Image 1 (cartoon, rainbow, N blue to C red):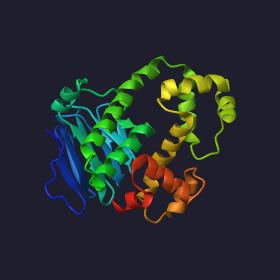
Image 2: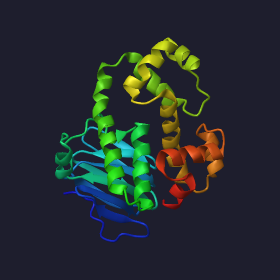
Image 3: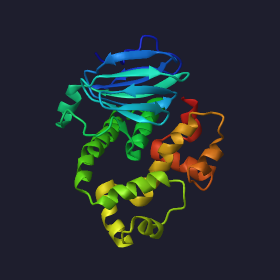
Length: 265
């Protein structure tokens, strides 16, 4: 019952099968509804533009531009698209893909709406592979996806993390556009700077500076979907020094400039 069957691909929409990965960029009109259904295979979907109300058995979320959604196999849900030209970038995983790499056919995540900025940035990087039609897109896509799955399945480690890890994560997401320092973070969560430095990489799988940059990039995705907001304004509002710094960082992490990403929406 997988719903990613695009009857009329429009504009720069596409669908491609990469040996067990079904990669789709699709568009939906406002008012289009998908009643209760489920997908045969798990998938990750980055909402590029517009929005939908996604309802599951125990959770309802309004999904907007920049949000990353997980669909588990045979998980019932329904969607109501409320914005003009809602556009999605979806990767569906067939069983043979998991089997080829010898990894479990599952994703571990408490919520179907994924907030991890690492995963959002990697999904944009995968999109870049298809936009630019790189010859190495299958190789690079699989490397990025294996890293995504490792991050998702590694979230269960956080169940055993000290309480301050959750406090620090929440603080970083709330104040991502501020001039953050280790001293400031230490005072806010009442944890010694050395302790933060020692354990941050273990629980966040990256450095503090890298994590903050990824948050800022992921937050900027929703702004980029609104063409009336100047890219320079987006850069400042999301915590970058200026447009040049934002553009360099965005391209370094995703393979696209903010302008190129916006043109694809």
